[in-house]
Amino acid sequence: MTGFAILLVYAGLFAGSALVVGLIRRAHGRRNDFTSLKTVTFGDESAIRPDRAASIISILVVFLLWGAFTGSKLVPFHVPGPFLGETSFSYEARTDSGQMQSGRVVVYAGVEAPAEPAGDGAVVASVPRGRDQLIRLPEGAQAVSVDGREITPGETLDVAHGTVSMTGKGTLSFSADKGLQMEPIWLPSPEAVAGRFVEIAKSGYQNFTLWEHLGASLMRVLAGFALGSLVGIPLGYAMGLSGWFRGWFDPIVEFMRPVPPLALIPLVIIWFGIWETGKVVLLFLAALWVMTIAARAGVSGVNITKVHAAYSLGASKWQLLRHVILPNSLPEIFTGARVAMGVCWGTVVAAELVAAQMGAGMMIIAASKFQLTDIVLMGIILIGIIGYGIDVLMRLAERKLVPWKGQS
Image 1 (cartoon, one colour):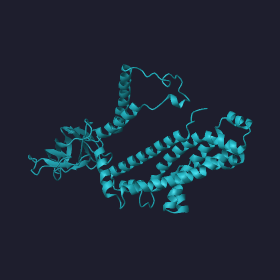
Image 2: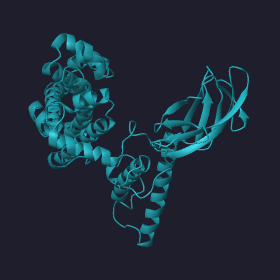
Image 3: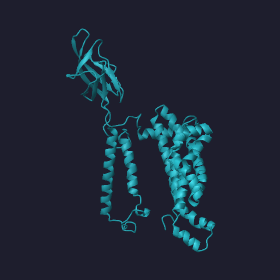
């Protein structure tokens, strides 16, 4: 129910933001430049550019939803949360002698019960936030009705601020209304994650500083990616230029390409052990096939008219490779490099699953064993930020090194 509510609110904010921004822009006049005048966007990357306003609003919406559904103090509004406070319901019970007796149950949900008794012989029960709690009725009494309504084993009745159910053995159980907010063990608030980040940045985690954990993961990813590129790019070029290489290696590449790196973990451990070598080899395999296919596609996609033009001008095969094939294949290789880096970052957590002394993945896995969701979420956010930063740097490098991308 909570997940559907988040999705519904997100869709509403998306549509509402697009409408409001569109109206504001219309009021200030439509953009009139070469890109805005294009009527065909398919196949033209320059025709559709990221809307910066949409990007900023998207980040704000995610933050607001996160805070609203976790009860954060950083956002001005929240969805209904769990019931916290005092409530009560009446019951009728049958004793062992067959007599009927009435009573009242006073429930303190998510708050501490007072030291004084509730009075009137009421049964007092303390229910932890987000949990169910069995109700201990007087000795020998078994409930037959709640708030004047008959109840049977397995049945659940609505009462004030919660529900009362009867177990198969005839025992009552109370559950307070949970509302739409997420429990901290499922999704902690933004300030809880930020506080944990400050704490670990100062004191470290599992005998290593936060920067040592992130640095270890980054070095493993870069090592695996570099090795995968050193092997995959020449192999892709050979497959794109030679029919024999293409026929020899194509079955291997196409067989290994759909195999997820996680499926290779047992085999990598058997062959290379559980220490650093095995982790780097797993990341190498994650990048190898992506880079091979990218290089092969880059070579195969070179415009044949450019090849004919080079030959007509007297170019040798080496000059053709150097001045025609290599420059025209670089855009595909850079695209493959970005995909390969993303795959490596997605694999590093699994690579650090076995016998890792430090690393972002190791930190996440160790925290999950103790249900420290704030550390898990902090690690995921840091991995995403670093991965996004690397992707931005690669895009900048692509603009500098391959300025002819998109030009025929």
